[in-house]
Image (tube, rainbow, N blue to C red; front, side, top):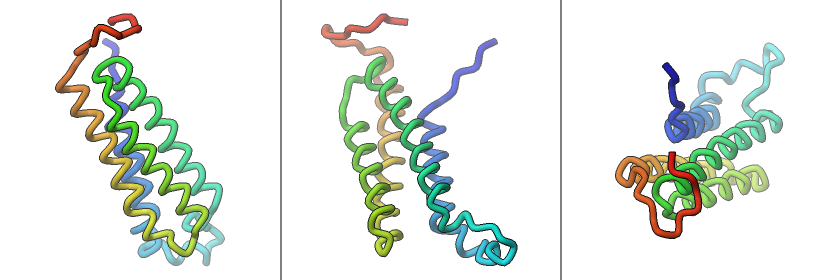
Length: 133
């Protein structure tokens, strides 16, 4: 039996994990630098989390758009969220202020995509250029 991955659920999970990392982890893990571990302000870790959210989001939203609903709202929400994530890395003094809308937009994109996929499962338009599976 072949199991399917719910990419929207994975994208939401990655976004939530990122939000927890950025918002809650510093409260509980303030002692990590004492042990030489610093993932709180680690640029490589931050960029890795952004890349993970981007890759999962692009795959999930592209699949939903192409094979299910053909609506651009999830793509626009996701692009806005990623834009805020990138801004968060550029304007470090506004980190918390930019993180909240980034996470809200990305999670919203996955939720909207998930709902569109479930409500319009294979509701193909006449202009579809993909194989129906």
